[in-house]
Length: 407
Image 1 (cartoon, rainbow, N blue to C red):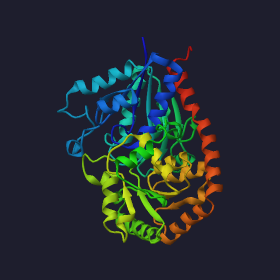
Image 2: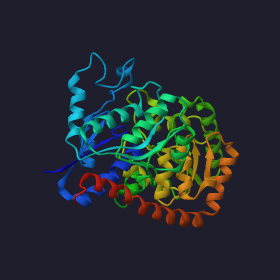
Image 3: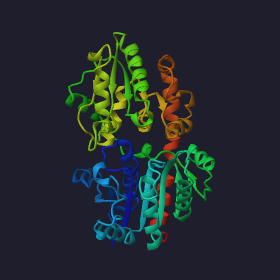
Image 4: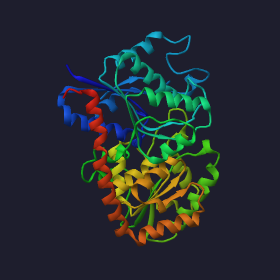
């Protein structure tokens, strides 16, 4: 009989950074258990392509397939009109599992203030089910924002206490929770597990560029990882700053831009798809012919290896920074949330973590500093990522202890 591990996180939404920590855990656990282990992934969109690529089985979780279905409702299985068997099926999967892994990611956040809506609410409900079933529950590499609602803080504190093992991926999460009045039980702070995810085959980056008909022509390349920030009511300012930076960069004959999409999800609206944001930006810059963007959908390792093509990276998305560092490419991060700042803190590159509203001239100055010190900074990043990778094996050790304490 096989050991069974159930995951729940931001999976099957074409988000390379969300899938990478799961890929790390499944690949490493297979090394420990061989064919004696299987993986179930509770997600928004069960997907055979995802299953085949990562060697898992996806099942519908507590999320609805799109926003319109979720309007004026609690999560799936908790509404009067819902099929009661839906929640029971999820409970059965957890009850027959040897471990429930919740995360990794920024799930302790007030996306919604309702107790039965949003990411945190889902994790709290699944923690409760695991507790009822005596199934070990591991909170895996979580980040946390400052919490304003006392109910969000209470729900978070309860979940942290009821989980079997708690891990965070940066010290900023701990500081935010303490400032929110949350009492934090025993825990460990470990680096972002995405650093250890399997990498793409050699030359996969060149193959993708050829498929996309992109010729960088031996120019100096600035990789750009952007995202929609309209939910922060600052999209116009953010885009204007990026356009200014791009115009300054491409004003030189020997420089080009490569937009690398970390998330290509577009079920509800196109703004969640980084390719849409990139195309809209390219239409507004002075030298669109010097701006290239990836047009197709690719899995995480394919997205990651593209950063090898860059001389420097400007990243808004957290895992644009993580992937760039992993590929040895110096990076400037625009910190729209504390999780970005937390990663640069671990990387020892705090000087290159800038507030999201940083003046564009300051952004350009930082990029130029990266380039003028490229080899030195690259060595620092490579050394630090090597150290961080050695630390994340602790995630696997914890999981193994919970799955099979007798081994």
